[in-house]
Image (tube, rainbow, N blue to C red):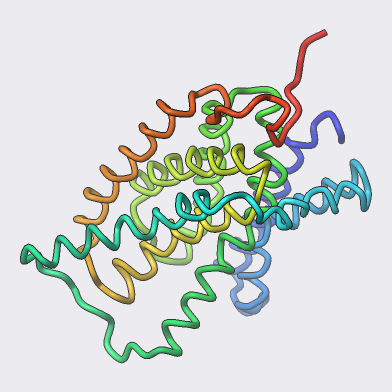
Length: 268
């Protein structure tokens, strides 16, 4: 189990996602919708807890959640995370200023609706997944691969983990989705590696990324969806290129190895 802990983590994460979806598709009355969403969106965290407990007991589980306590990391990393939200908002402002046509807010939009959707956006992904993807999987991947390769591997697995949800709800085209997930995966590794493994920062990156679809093209209707994909794709692509060029592909960081939130594997 310890030797193949990462493989077991991915398998269990997928199983906890896929089994409820199959039940929901073929026998929706068997599994309540609330239980369905808890099982699916929290599956990476559930899987990480299970595998951590099996390989190291309570001490390993506490280590898994240690990243949630690393919040004193410097204001620039909070800015870097929230820029994924602020950048598209600025782009939307210029688009509207120069006469672009926008869908506008959904009918009947109220403060309680906005707040409840903000809470759902925070929980559904950022809070529910990060202990698994970044807290458990990312440091183990980086113990064997460089930061770029680890981000690519995790990004593909993370994106494909969402595929079962396409059978029960309308989602953005997968070829667009996987591109966006891969880019955010690199940026989150950058944030994670430069903050000694802060899951607070990766949650902010994740939340800001999800905010765009939920609010900018969703509730607020500030941009047409396709304009957002094109403009947002270009912006986030430039952001990523600047990060890789500045920080370097090996660690996506200029910090010494001793400050990295993982132990590099070395062949005997």
